[in-house]
Length: 168
Image (cartoon, rainbow, N blue to C red; front, side, top):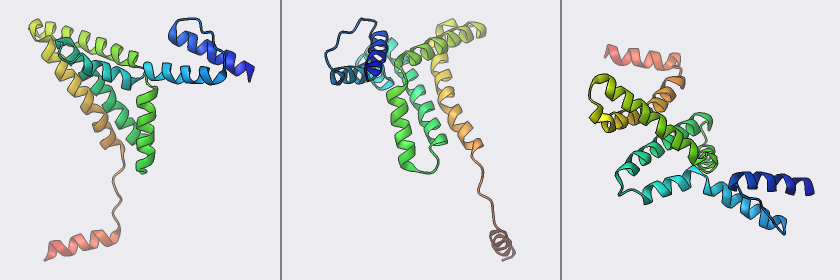
């Protein structure tokens, strides 16, 4: 039990970048939960929406939407046919994926958009290129999901029924 508390203190101090002095394991567990939620994708999305009147926040919000879209497609892919499993997986990913990964995605897509706009000869349209790239990144996971799922096999009875309808 003491080794788990020491390990949790080390993890928490690494997350918060401050040394932690705690008096009880309950206080430690509440701080761990708070620090995970503070760095989560959901918290970053709330911050991006709060900054929305600023023009650069609109692009950051688009990156959060891309990340959520990818997470929901992955939850649908790996959740099977159970709606509860899909919802649980989606919530777990939204709470456990750090918002710093979305910031990295945002920077990568913005660099890509700027370089593409320069390559085409219209550097002033980098914002539009960012939106196009983001929309493409939202479309790709669902396209992958639709091609990855096997189609329903048809039975011979269904084939015979279809042939009978064509004859009429």
